[in-house]
Figure (cartoon, helix red, strand yellow):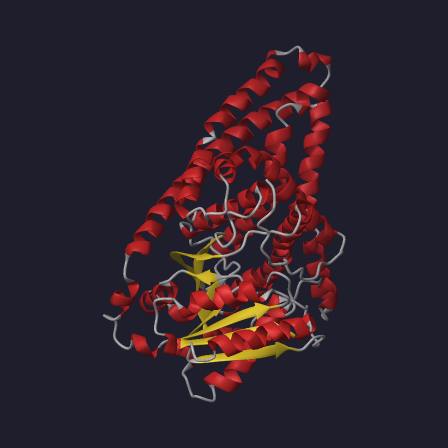
Length: 514
């Protein structure tokens, strides 16, 4: 079929059309090739063309600083909008819109092996939100392969919250269904289809009056989330061709988490804030919402790892480029990665980052889609191709180039280069330029302080102190938990070592050390 490409998964080997399979496999090489060729050439040229590398790194560092200023500006503007939205009574604004009461919310919460405390906190936030509960239909989508313990958790939640919403339904996702990659996407797709048949169709609710929110199981909504979402749905230009993206903040257990994982999580919040100010680049991420009509028409992706971004791109191609993500400028709270020991926490954090970086599989999917779909404007194809390629390339390479190229030519460039004026000034000049770039870290500290919840009583003064100095570890985290997992993911894709969905263990670890 002409539009079969919309439903392609992460793996070229699964594509039946031989020609398209070869094209897709060739495109899978692209992210890893760009990353490796950049780093290899940077290393080799440091030996044989140190002057070229020195000039490049000076220009590149200047670009990095200007880019930091540009991104920091967007972050500050977003922060101001979030502060404003947190003070607005959106439910009161909604009541001025005709027929707002017709809107229902379907909330899908995929669950694997999470403990009852985490699930209970999520449901408690839903129950206590400032929105009519008779408009909330909640689905706890449980993985059958989670075993008996997860069934007990589901039963406990059902008993406690059964009368708290318009509907609360437990759906068990069978294991080993054909055409699925076991994970959040497959679970969500299955739960959505069951909810359609057994709730929405059965009660004859119009699809256009239903907004579906796909949340990670640790997602706690802020009080006015559904009021904000409904208001944006009813007032945006094209609600049936729009997804809606909140800002993820990682406040659930931030005071218990170690410094390194706090930095990574907070940095992710910063990036999502920046993207809210650049809606032309915004893609659905983690916990997000969309019209149920589009959810059913398009089909939630069940054969990919990065389902949160893939549902946007599926929608984009389904509607021939006429699909957008609306920034909500409103937060939802999630968990920082934690485990029982610091080492296990860091290992889990690396695996989570690598799973996110596996989003580089979107590059072959999107590029093939652009080749197949002739109805999308050429400028859109060029724009998204450039943005996506640059994004995954910079994730893997930028921090390595900035941190190592400043001194590598001096170290290996030979005696002639070492005694040159350029060699003498290179580390000093790049160091001063990067010092100016510390402005971005200052913006990050201010933003982090705004979202930080009050310190629990059991938290020591030393933990509060580490909150202020944790940004000293930023260069380390950019390399170890940024560049390395991004390189890991792109090289795996390059060599056809496909990843499955790795479910980040959710837990509380109050005794973790910094």
